[in-house]
Length: 287
Image (tube, rainbow, N blue to C red; front, top):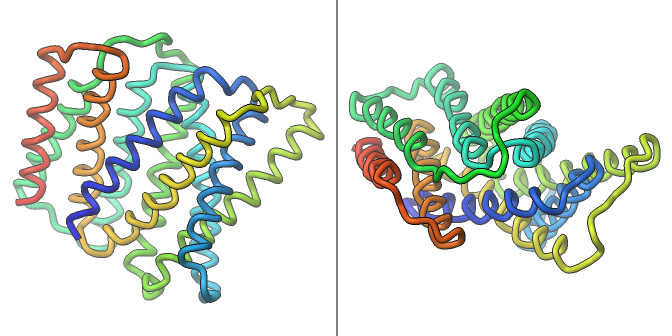
């Protein structure tokens, strides 16, 4: 099952990078944001339904999926707004730290015990999150961004907590159905919100009718669907204090390398120290 620690960071890298760059240049109104989210949820729902949906699960699975869908809409909305209104790297870092809510839930409700190695490893992870991001940012931190990133942190963490609870429930065998319904419910709710925002609030959709939105929605939708399915599997087999920090630290390392390639930035001493810190943290968390 160790493949989850490779698959999840790569999928998250694809989603985070594409979402951040697309949001900066193409999303101008709240209706744009809702339409973009709806398109991604549509692709995720279709992808999972074609592969997995063969039977209707118990009502409890619907309830888990509904809660996850609502939290996902809130998370994706404020995440995109944070990208639009503030610096990208701190947005990714602070969002990554929503794992703290998952770790607390795992410790309190599922008696996940922390070894001394895990505690030290988490400290190295925290150092890596601070050291790895590059300096170049087109927008600075501001009050509006601070509000959006706080809400992103909260709803992202709570979404992970719901998934953690589902993974430890008696209904965890319905992993594919839960993930499929989760995106289907998010699609319906987000589509309704888009219509209401356009018709009632008269907030226009300004996204150009070209290849960009379908392509971005396709890539992010597939990445989202597979990521969430793998996350349910990961929480079933590994403690949250291993899954979340390892996944997020690996993501930060990959983001560093990708930024160096796309933006032609040379790694600084600070970034190299961050890379070393992340590797040490990953090793310690798995002892």
